[in-house]
Length: 396
Image 1 (cartoon, one colour):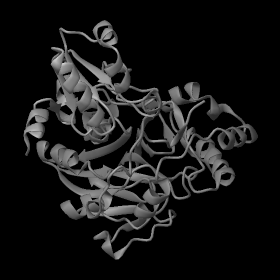
Image 2 (image 1 turned 45 degrees about the vertical axis):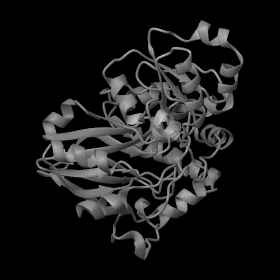
Image 3 (image 1 turned 30 degrees about the vertical axis):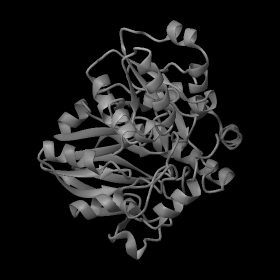
Image 4 (image 1 turned 180 degrees about the horizontal axis):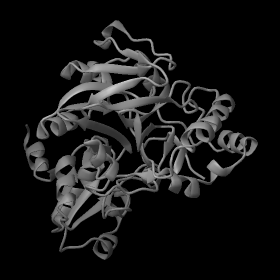
């Protein structure tokens, strides 16, 4: 390490350390130094920091008065950019001006891999003797679930780099992971199912209607499941598959059951979200899939009891700021009131869905091809493959 690198290291903070500070309630001033376009597309939004201040680095260098008028001298300042280069330049300048400052090492690219975990507290889970943890990739908006009964657990929608967080939950609670499952073939992030199955020896499960083509490099032989299939969690608790096409052709939701009775907990993948619905266009069949999605909602999702808790695979980072220890959920009764598109007739629904799709996720075709073959993500360089927020939902 050269002298310049040694000096810079004292001005850096790891993304995970920044999250620890925020979780402790430390009064940190986060300054984004990217361009307005980068900021609008994807920003740090967590806990009390719903909308972090933005001053592009070139403006910082042009105006000392701008700095003195907008940056506090009595707080620690943390600068942030895409990969840590511009934020380090800003940190060096601010340090010379007497500010207490750190630059996020790796920038938003590193923050993209930070997770928060919380256990759900629901009466239905107590009745079941089951436990559920929601693990949130707080910048990307991806969510993974650990569902346990007794000493065994099933993992739903594991993303590529979450295995350490999943294994930590299992280890801290004395759980053995026996099953891993994906609700569908994801388009916005690389699945961690194959890697986690290989690491734990768990059985992998995929939808038989999804069109997977597992590669010999997958390292697992997945069990292909259909509508009604039950994955054992433990102590007579099961996850029952419900075929819910529309976001993809083979999408499935999972209802939590015991002894044939459903307990108002539904893992919905990308079929329905908190305040949004799944988009139908990521397989280039928007009209057809929107039609399927309408029937999925009206014939399957909305027929469930209003008290059923929706546990989706994503949250919208533009409208929801995750809070440490607070799960992101919504009940079906609330969704009926809040998601207006659900009350449209079929013609209105399909027209709206086809005309309202947002920009597609970056690199989504590459990600789909990787997930189609169930390639373990530790076999290649992820780089910026998953950069940016998830974009699997449509809001009205």
